[in-house]
Length: 564
Image (tube, rainbow, N blue to C red; front, side, top):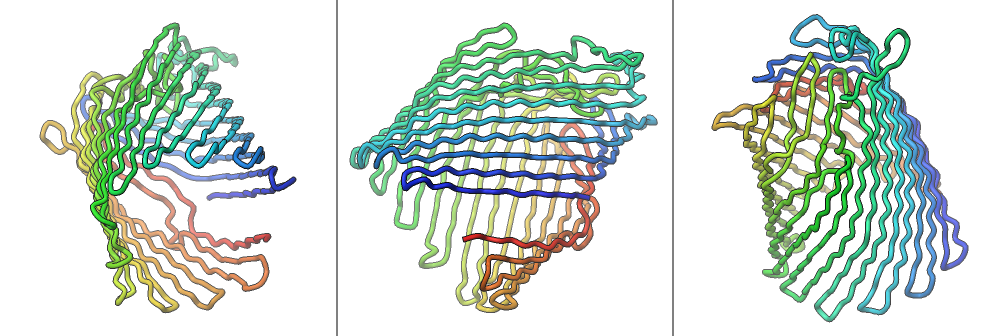
């Protein structure tokens, strides 16, 4: 069950032809009741079976206020500023029941209160010097503060030695993030040649504090240093990017080099990186309707500041996450090729073929470890991944039939590594998605849309298949123009995933008067009254079944007004 109330107000005050101010206020209140059920079995070497079932209630609110101004300083210069404030308080509570390896479980009470406050200020000054030269100066300040208070109560914790007999746990987390960015962009054109320059500096301070408490004789005490974090991450980086573009039919060439000097401080360690990221793009027009392109990019990958912390943080009933403790920095090669054929104006046919490959010698993997019925997940540095993705799109319109046919096929090959306890295995995944859709455009009151989609995911290791998932999706759409002011729309979606079947039916009746500022509609959602959505999934380390209740059949009446 879901209850939602939302509203927004927007206004513009124009003081003169050169100066205007915009305001906006947005608020949403959302209360959700639901049930979830999760079963997961981890394969060798873990041999663990977990079942969790809960009834939950959540209350989310969002308040956002924006203020912006736009001033035309002179005919070729503009000053723009914006200030935004966002506040998101969230509450969550549930009654759950958890089993571990089919051992009789215990009920668990969960309560969580979060508060996210965010202030974002931006300033931009744009100057168009002449027809061939322009530049932009900008500054941005971001201040973000997130508080999380997660409490869980269960007898099952009393039997886990690390908790020292308590059944009440309280995980507190506070994240503060401050960013300051100063930036310059300049563009110069010489006939068919373009020069682009971007330079600036970015300062980022991120602090994460966390502590896990237990209740002992009515007093709250810290569980211990292995569950406490107080980490301050500092990033100061200066960057400069130069780009040259040659653009004269039928050839376009783009060469770019970005250099970055990073100064990092974290956990008492200092590190300095000089990063060079070149890229090259080439395109050639074979004709007015055919284009080929080739792109190469050498990109540096850095973990986010929020990923750096040393000790465990409780994230769920039995789950702990651990962060990174050392600086990591690795590079990725990305190569893409595209062919585009667009003759829709003449033959009503378009075709696109894209191939993208990426490779990195270094990367990360996630380790799952069970101890005393608790699951610990850690991100570790290891070998990188290899990915090849192909995308084929074709669309054909048949004027005689007033019908269009769209087809898409997207296979993906992925090589990666996964670790369970101390065993690391290499996996090869082949994912395929195929879509065929037909839409009619009859010069009649009624039109239809038909579609079918297939997804197949297969994973192999050591030459043997270890997992496969299949999903089918069928679509029927119906559009009926009852009159110039009344429209009827119906959408039917049928899903079949790993022997599970689901039906979703939505309908809408619209009334748009020729006079006045109001529009009316009646919407019927989930008319088949589907109560829960279940997903069965098998991967290289586990088999899982997740069921979540969804909002049942309901009807809504809508009135909208536009002021002109």
